[in-house]
Length: 337
Image 1 (cartoon, helix red, strand yellow):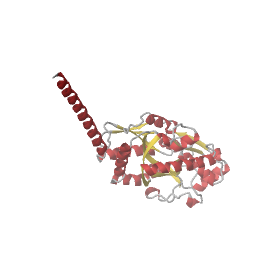
Image 2 (image 1 turned 90 degrees about the vertical axis):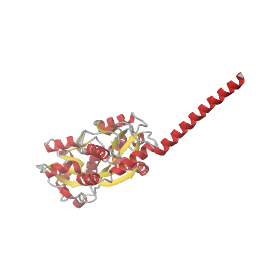
Image 3 (image 1 turned 180 degrees about the horizontal axis):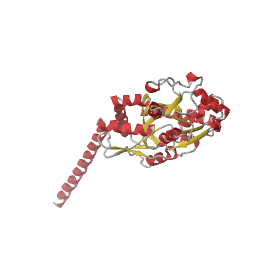
Image 4 (image 1 turned 120 degrees about the vertical axis):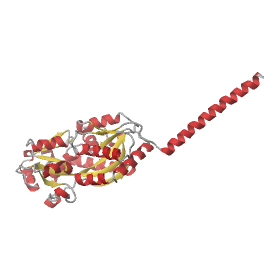
């Protein structure tokens, strides 16, 4: 009798174990089928101060994702300026595998590592999607004696240190590279340029408007409002063709006899170790965001070039961009071979 009771107990225990395993497996299958989605507030980290093009990107992404109910949880833009975005990189890297942390990625992630300003490289993060390209413009105070691109070239050839050049966010950034490429294209040693790095483009622009520096290399969208207000003048754009709208009269560098086309991509990246499901969720959400009318309007307003690239291709592009950027920085004397 006791033996029969013991056998019944063992059978009951086995039954509960098997049932538990089956339920767990069923839950796992459901989760796999349903994919991943954020369950709490999501931070979009920006490596520069409020007001610049990186900040505008983060805030536009946040606004569209929330207003169009593409994402069902709150999103917060968190500015972590300093160190040429290294502070932001460090912050995001502290949350491996957590899809609730995103960051606005720029070519600074490549250049900072190449020149030795940061230990972080693009391989320390998860590429989710590249959103657009942002071509560099060269701008001066409206009262500056530098009226055209040819005036700037003449000054640089006579004395490279006679023109103080400001940009964000660090030495070796793509805005710095743009200035160096101009110098190289016109036969001036880029290492002799007088350059000043600011925490954000807004700060660099404030200094050129105040007459503290002569020139700023920045995104067209940052300069356009000041051009419209008559406070700033663009003397050249490093785009393959002229912009439209309020900047339609500004010539490209190619039109002025200088072979210079250069800009930087703007992307959304996550910490290292994001799962395929997490990447797929954010990739899909961002693709939806870039198709709404407000996004298209924002591209035109900020003079951004539409270029949405998904995670897998973006990862391949980063390998090539890193090699290309390193070659430029070495050639300009900003990095070692």
